[in-house]
Amino acid sequence: MAHEMIATEVQGAVALIRLNRPQALNALCDQLMRELGEQLLAYDADPAIGAIVLTGNEKAFAAGADIKEMQGRTYPDVLEDDFIAKWETITRIRKPVIAAVAGFALGGGCELAMMCDIILAADTAKFGQPEINLGVIPGAGGTQRLTRQVGKSKAMEMILSARFMDAAEAERANLVSRVVPAADLLDEAMKLAARIAALSPVAVAIAKLSVNRSYEVTLAEGVRFERSVFMPLFGTADQREGMAAFAEKRKPRFARR
Ligand code: CAA
Image (cartoon, rainbow, N blue to C red):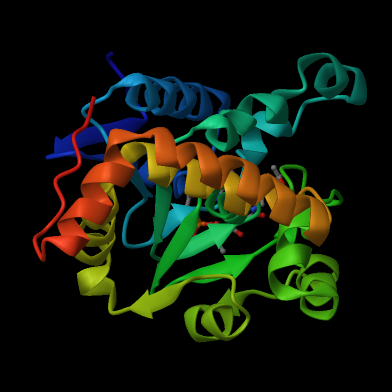
């Protein structure tokens, strides 16, 4: 698959996707988002891949949707095209997607990171939803996901005033799982992805599904859902291998299909 705006590589069972439009701070134009969606679906369908890392460059994870591309669009245009709907491919990926964020993650860039399963941040990361400066609001889930992540007051402040959050604040606010020195970001993300990719692919996919369900339903329904997906895991070879390995004091070997 030839792509111009993303660069990819595979290391073992981990796929790395780099947003690669540095001259525009990785602004998320239609072509970039199409390429990203296609590549994510391809890795999701590839049994050799166990986890995906999504990153940008030192200066920007992504500075948002492409303002110059959106500038001339009218309401009927966006109503008909619904370009943001195409961004949601990432939310349908069953394998874990780790966002490794350095520099700016603004607007759609922050929203894209929040659509990933884990955000690892470099100490240089800056998160923000500055759409209000452009006379619009976040359109790729920012008002919803940011509010669930950091709470109403901080989400309101960021969305209404366009204030950026640095990496330390993002960690305190639980927007990111942890902050690492910028020089170590990719290594840490790849190590984390490799660790996940070595585990039971079925258990990992079901764990992701179950955590994500917690965003959609009540606690009681979520707990019922968890039990309903926990029990079938006892029908898998991975459960037999994982528990046998524990009992035999050895490392489990989980097969990729
Ligand atoms: N869209 C298109 N181009 C962008 C861009 C964006 N979101 N962000 C940066 N660029 C371009 C700039 O226009 C500039 O291009 P030229 O050299 O051709 O002029 C290049 O990237 C470098 O940017 P700057 O010169 O502005 O770099 P800086 O270091 O001075 O500033 C910045 C960095 C503060 C991130 C600034 O670029 C900025 O404010 N960017 C826009 C951030 C933003 O508003 N994002 C929200 C977009 S709307 C959205 O995302 C909607 C949604 O919810 C889906």
